[in-house]
Amino acid sequence: MTTTTPVAADSRAGRSKRPSRRGRQEGIAAWVLALPFCALFLIFTLWPVLQSLFMSVTDTKSKDLRTPFSVDIVGLDNYTRALSDPVFRKAMFNTAYFVLIGMPLTLGLALAAALALDKGIRRFRAVFRLGFYLPVITSIVAVAVVWRFLLQHESGLINTVLGWVGIDGPNWLGDPNWSMPGLIMMASWRNFGTPMIIFLAGLQSVPAMLHEAAKIDGASALQRFRHVTIPMLRPTILFVSVTTSIGYIQFFEEPLIMTNGGPLNSTISISMYTYKQFGFGNYGFAASMSYLIFVIIAVVTAIQFRLLRENT
Image 1 (cartoon, rainbow, N blue to C red):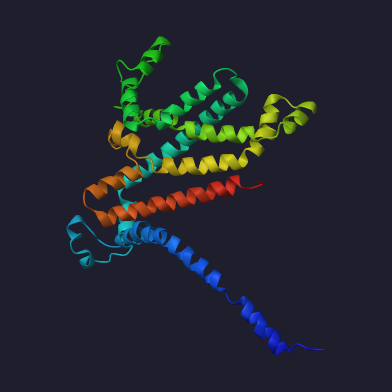
Image 2: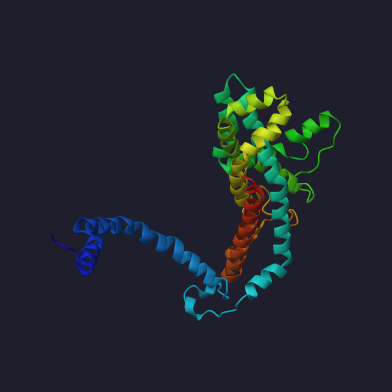
């Protein structure tokens, strides 16, 4: 009878843990396949992020591009300068105005359209779905040109319709008090198609037996929507809210094309002001504002996760 000593058993266990020749070859092949992605990520993503972060704590301007290592480190001066800049604070207010009004309006339109497509519209459903989504894939330039005609003070379609019911329409794009509502209307109309598709998928995943059980218990349609549909849609609402708010905090195209930030900076956004500072050659100052936008997005996203993930 042969016996196995502990030393021999440990030796065999150590040999079994060593990667085989085939395992080493597969590991090398995996690294070779991943190497192009790693190289592209380092060159085009990680390095620009680190470079812009460094730039935000320096006084880099356009004249320093030829000698990037001769810039002075200014610490957090660019950040404090941005937060004390009245135009930047005005841009923050405009951005908050756009997000707080525009995002609920967009999500409300999207949910209403999704409910109509899911339960209400029976004929030509594909046509309506395409029509609702068409503004999303239409060029912002074309959309802006059409909406500039719609929002004209004297002969625009919106003011003409308001005139039919006795309302004197405002100068949408020329009045500082009405320029932002005009942009919000256009942005909501243009962007509700994507969340509508996501809401529609979420509605179709709600089990029908839950609605049937609630109906048997005597729940009305509104009660079933409130106590069955909305709780089941909570993960969908979280996803749509986060993605929409990230896009709206960075809103840039609408004011750039429609109003160029005017009148009187009433529609200038944080992203647009940052873009202008890059154009003026104030790279360090503009980079600091970019990271302030990042912080704002991170905080808003964390708040949404905190509010909407509870009880899921």
